[in-house]
Length: 232
Image (cartoon, rainbow, N blue to C red; front, side, top):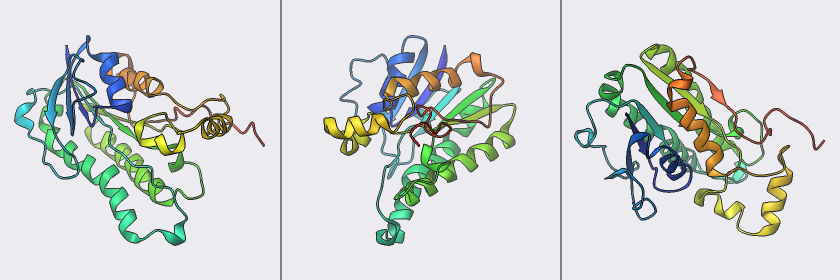
């Protein structure tokens, strides 16, 4: 079975990936807590990506997949955003991810063909008001992923999933009542916001042997928001 490492996989999309793949792969979850995954068939490693250095000795010698889940949704008018906010979003979404990738690179290159899955946002490709900070951080991920995919092909595949708003704890303040949920659903051509399972299924595909000829791609799993104009 493949060895898959999920960073921040204890809730939301990461947990959904673990639930989906727990019986087909050896899943390692490096996260701050394990309260919501204690009933899953996974190997838990206490780890806070913002302050800790990942102890690779707790991982197998070969990693076939890596998913980096931590992120932020920091929406506010540009004129009120301090530079420190941009730095923080870049640190959470991008710099911490780079550190993890460099740490486990020996295990990834030991695989016959490893797969890295990263998360961006629909805001990186669409101009959306109040998204300057998060769009900049997620845009860095997309550029990085393509460059890394080119550098490590064919040994490591690198792909990015770019969702729209998804019902996870991170997005709770945007979906915490029926009015907000209805408005969010209406903004999407498919008339609903995302569920963790929507993203988990794409991640599972990108980690599997069904996607061995796919690398350097940005997959917009966003209910059609980034490409379809149906509410105009």
